[in-house]
Length: 212
View 1 (cartoon, helix red, strand yellow):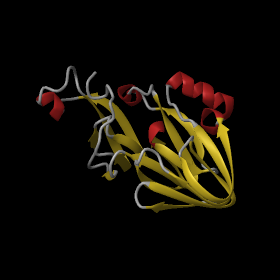
View 2 (tube, rainbow, N blue to C red):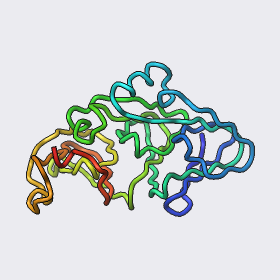
View 3 (tube, rainbow, N blue to C red):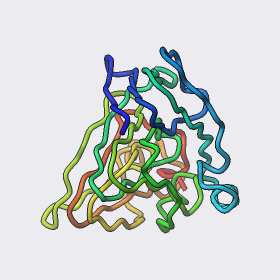
View 4 (tube, rainbow, N blue to C red):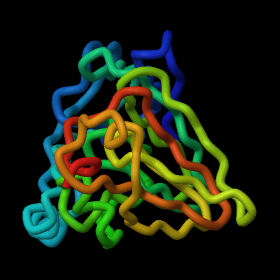
């Protein structure tokens, strides 16, 4: 299995000994040793995955990198966070996914109106299995714990990913921006309930999520 490590907070180094990783197309910044690069259609899921992504709007251009040596990845100076999976599943916005172990399965899943809030359709990207994934954020990501006693409300523009036994609901509500007169319509939030982790970034994407 490939070894993921961070060099600083904005560069991912992946050491490979004949194995492979899947990474965002065009994110390789350097490598040593012998590496082979192959573009994968539909996020590496073949024709079915490609069609699903076109229908849902979850865009994920992926390449496979295989070889002996070390490959370095980065994307627009984004902060990088490593997530270890042990047979569980990670839900992540496609634009925030940098790289995964090749053995991890990627797909799309229906998430209700939350996806509609972010403008990415009604689906989001899933990563599951055992291995590591690297996710990106605009600024240092914050990992927030959700418990049955303490549900969490998140602005759709700040949401990156989540994992664990969580249920999410798309709900309307008054936000700070609405009170300040910066919203032109009804504000929406994502409510997470259950037991798990939610990753958020300190900078909001330009979405219609908070101003529908």
